[in-house]
Length: 247
Image (tube, rainbow, N blue to C red):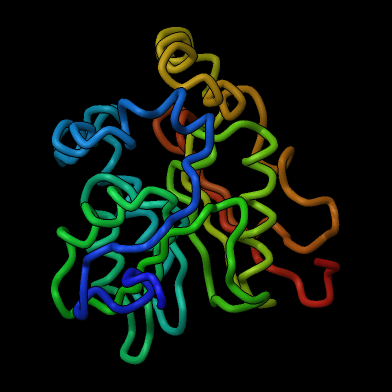
């Protein structure tokens, strides 16, 4: 029996199957944001998501959609659900015959996302670990990591990046939107980082290093686009998967 999230949203949103165990780091450090049922009631508010990103949520989403040309042919993978209206907006960009697929290890997050999508949205959801995707190699035309990497310990972050690149076809793209090392002139560099260090203990990595530090060293991708926002505190990177790289 397949997990009901393995089918388009229009068919069902129920979940009645054993799912992957919640990683210890997620349970220990992010129970308050994603795991506990009350988390969704607190954080699934557009204004709050925007406030957490210092008013940059819409700007970052708009930049991402513009990067995609508001057009998503073929198969698109979003790794992990996101609060706010990003995924419904992505679904509206899916070309005829295309499909947007979302993976998340938390059934509660997938159920929440299903409630935000139109009944006929061209979306398929899977309960799956970002660090151990069960998709075949080169199965997608593009993949997206939206504010996920800063929530993961380094070893998990490296596996997530490797897996995302593995499932994208040669010539396809991986887009990453997340925190970045802010400019020394950005006052939030000295205020927001200590806050994140307390609430999100792995986020400091992205404030001090570039994403390239955690990419596979096998030459399977090249950087084709790099944008910074809000005094450098946020970034959008686009990597192109290279044909013939070892995987």
